[in-house]
Image (cartoon, rainbow, N blue to C red; front, side, top):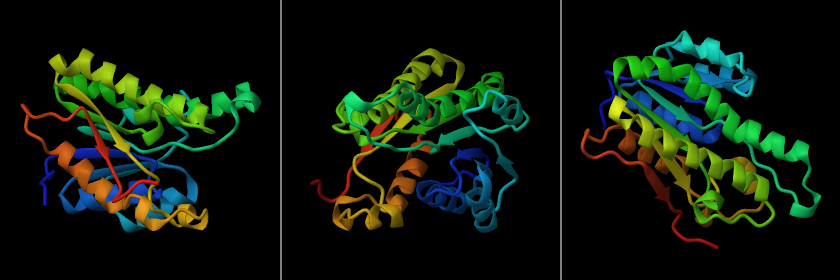
Amino acid sequence: MANLSSSTVMLTGAGGALATAIAQELDDAGAQMVLVGRGEALARAADRIPATEVIDVDLSDPASVAQLKKVKVDILVHTAGAYSMQPVQKATTDDLRAMLDANFLTLFHAVQGVLPNMIKNKDGIILGVSAAQAARNTGPGAALYTASKAALGAYLNSLNDELKSKGVRGCVLYPMGAIDTPANRDAGMKWETMIDPRGLAKSVAHILTRPDRAHITDIKVYPDEEE
């Protein structure tokens, strides 16, 4: 098991299936956890995972930045986000705004919250979760979702290029398939085409424990087979 005992990790989207698996993996690795989420899902996560801080905040709200700045962390793992489908010809401005708010603006505000301290310490990792559609630059029926997740990846890649000389690195995780959750199973997806969130969590731990001269800037994780 990787050792993160000297690190404090802020995990957004706490309470979601992927975030829960990541929290368990990083807690086992010795990390101090700061859980960020909303409502009942966050409360359930806090009951299962020991945390130094539990922050209930809407990351799409600019006011969230000030709350996050109060907490000093070494690593940000951003899993907060949402998914929706709509035909391109029927998509509205409100649909676009909802996807950008959930999948990109939340990351932007989280980064604004943690970045000043990372730059001050000349050390930090910011990892965001994108999507297979963004990795492939195609998402039939999910153009707005794909665009918002592609924005997340482009932002983190640029952040990495800009700030690596200051000791802050960015990384994008691409789950190359749907994550195995009760909701996705209820939607009729086959388990063999989905990715076990525990496997993704181990990939996150692997990324976060690379030595200084072996940084990972993006990684794609595949299920056993694809449709």
